[in-house]
Image (cartoon, rainbow, N blue to C red; front, side):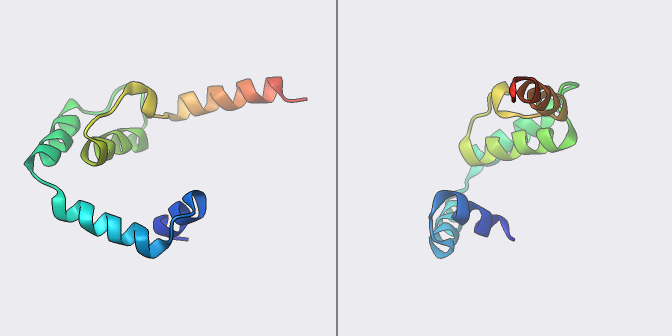
Length: 90
């Protein structure tokens, strides 16, 4: 299943509409977005995030123009959350 199909399934937006929005987004990418992406890449990977978290942080800076630490889910954070949830579960 492609990312377009997964987004469509979770949001209810038709795949064609998602593709149309992505095409429009790509057409509008300019230097501010590219600069934000490059600036985030230059920060490098934090000791608190895995490689996937680092890449997602950089991509979010391109797509959203902003990134907060809370938006990055590292394996460590995910593991802690799963353990906490397992302790609460009946």
